[in-house]
Image (cartoon, rainbow over all chains, first blue to last red; front, side, top):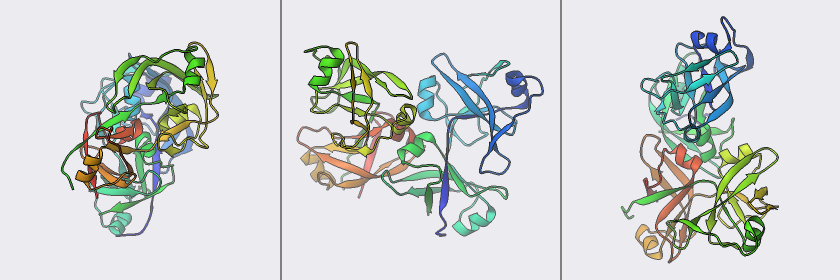
Length: 191
Length: 191
């Protein structure tokens, strides 16, 4: 097993949008603008935000992450889900079948999603070379250990391997806070 | 090691108050009233609430837990702390020295705390008989395992032994959500 440390990225609530939904939210043909590049190549935080609205609550100014995607997807924490009164499943990104919806409100219009709200499943991005070094495979489920004041070991962490990926573990804010992690903290794969 | 399962209680943000602060918040001589008995004998959720106020944010109607205590203490999650812009330490209940303060606002007055805001350290309440059965001692630090979709193992879980305690593990909402726990879920001590 490699001694290489894996940095953690803590994902706050965010939204991925389709071209079609962006036309409604921000106007026909609107182009997302880059606020900040994210660690995974080609991914970026946008200057654009939308409001998440349900019968129970609203989160204002939730950041859109670009580029556009094939399906609009809202990633929130379980803490968030309680405030919104929705019951999202814990899923890998892109796997939204049967998930609940909510209303997205942008400056030019609003979109009522019938599905797309998920809690992201914790996962580690890595290249094939990283995978060889750690002795793991794409889609393998591993345990990951965090040290520190709130030390813990997460089970059921998904390995995602792609040539374009940068080595990084992604957790949501509940997981980050439960472990007293900061973005940039490092963790270790246990096998 | 006992096979006995330990139920989990998830603590939402709450406040413990002194007699003196209750006089200010709710009026001289005001008596806390019981909304619901808690699992630990003698402890109860009150009908009374206060607002937590900082320069950055407010949480309205945060429940007071009774009975009155020797020091006023505010227990919040790290998620909460970010919204309030305070930086509380992870501490055992009662250990508030050097922690930050905030303003408590009640129906009759407000109190500016100079300290008392903490994130509670996860812990397990048990009787001496339970401790014998589990092979642990008061103040021992153990690992605790949660099964399920977000299975994980918490390190640094404090054992608290007292004749009056009911067997129960307490975590905060971040920890509960990171593990997909519900109040009443059961966990296992690893040694």
